[in-house]
Length: 306
Image (cartoon, rainbow, N blue to C red; front, side, top):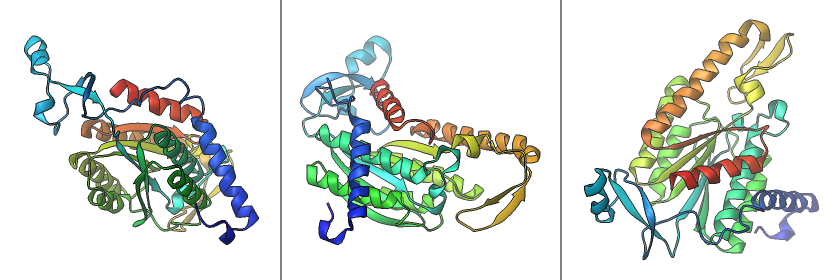
């Protein structure tokens, strides 16, 4: 953790509050969990899972294939467990709070903190990468208590918007992240995925690149559903500002709401479809949704898939 002598009492309280919130989210999920829900290839056989392109053929259960014509892989309890990274978008658009009252950045940072706590309690090594236009923070995975506290302190600072206020270039950043992670890992991307139309396509290609590098990838797509999906503003002139470009416009919500909702729905559907086709696990999160619910959905999905 950062040197306490360099922090004001208010900053220390903020970090401690963030750490408490992250740890509280995790409580209840660990209770009764005797083995990690994540599996690698080690000594003790656990069960089967579907074969994925890139899996070593030596782990294919050919007897099952002979009986059912299905390619499945033997899964083993892993003694050293997996390596885990959270890739957090800290760009200016993530500072938007909307009706939920919590910014996308604060929501994403808290969720990231909870994941770090969860992974460390399962003795998995966990690390952090943060980006906006570029990758500006890289913390390699470890599983020690001091390491997790240091991660939580960093995330607490990021949640305030103190770091990474530049425009989004998620595509370039994710390409960079793919090259920076030398071994297969679980990579959880937390972002609103806001880009230009061309940039959105590049971001999908970057996610595919992460998969092609052999990583398991989960995307937490963080939005304020009320305003960013449904455009639920009062029917009176509203002045909106692009947090990344500074461009401002005055709109009459009733005149643009239907078209906006269609465009937003199409955007989310296209990202979800592209992720599914690329083998990337996609989860849309509303900042009005409790953190614990989001984490529960994450764990449930991991257990179903693995």
